[in-house]
Image 1 (cartoon, rainbow, N blue to C red):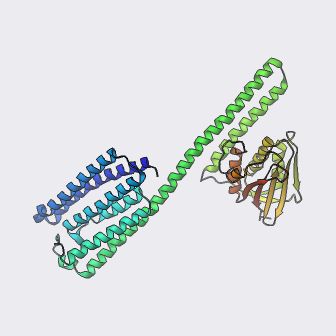
Image 2 (image 1 turned 120 degrees about the vertical axis):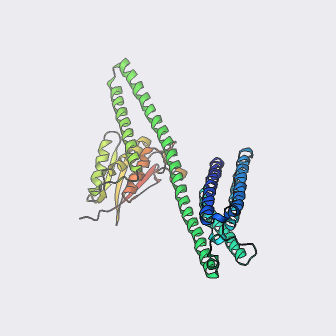
Length: 409
């Protein structure tokens, strides 16, 4: 939570307090007229005085907020002071509007909820505890005559019996902590959703910048080959143009696929499929570009696969082709409950500090961290598998994909 966000929350508290005061004033007038018309002015005077104090403080809070230079810590203290003072005023308001008979205890619930929305989740329990203590002290002082009890109803003798007081206090204190619990729960959900939205927004910005960068580079390649072809009539450059256009098309397909995989509602149909045949189809796409060897002792290696699984091996092979000029080896190993596929290249390798993050984001750095690996991670997770990378002892990298074996026979 940054200081500007917290300032906006303080403004919300000040506005909300104003609305609550207006509602309380209307309710107070209506209650006095309906329940005790003969004591209308007697009940309304102290309530009006307290409302005036709240409005004055609200104006003061707003002025201080605008003129003061705030640090995050000081702003949090400022919010706590506001809410604590509100609780004191509400306790006084409850006293002057009938004590145990007053319905203004509901305002405590608003303050507890506000604490959860404005501050950290634990704040709701702090405010709930403070409200419980002050409300309990008020009832004790009124019961033992430390402060004069103001009665509204005619049955005050019944309502002021010890058993009634205790049961009322327990039920209302319980409502404070129930509100605190739900406020805590709701604030945590909102905080989680906010983080997810921020992450999604950052990913989108990164996503767009990478996409623009890649497509621009390819357009420059096409333009360069087109100019050379026009001057020299060399058809080799025309083939390069065709390859680049196909690559652009593949990038666009990857973008569409990645966006689809990110959707929470995304579901795929899974069927029994031969893993070796899936890998073989991906290898055939790169025929002639690089020497690729598949080593698989048991070619009856079946997994529960969706139509997206082939993209895993296409992207891993494509990644190896881009960063390695030597041959590529693909090894399928039996691991009892899983099939493990190793895609081995002999390129420059990946720095240790990037091994844990290359599947989580798609930044373009010197290491191979493009959109393809983000797609690999999403699809493998969808298939309840694992993917990771290790150094190739002979130089380069080995990407591992572990997928559960098919249980259908």
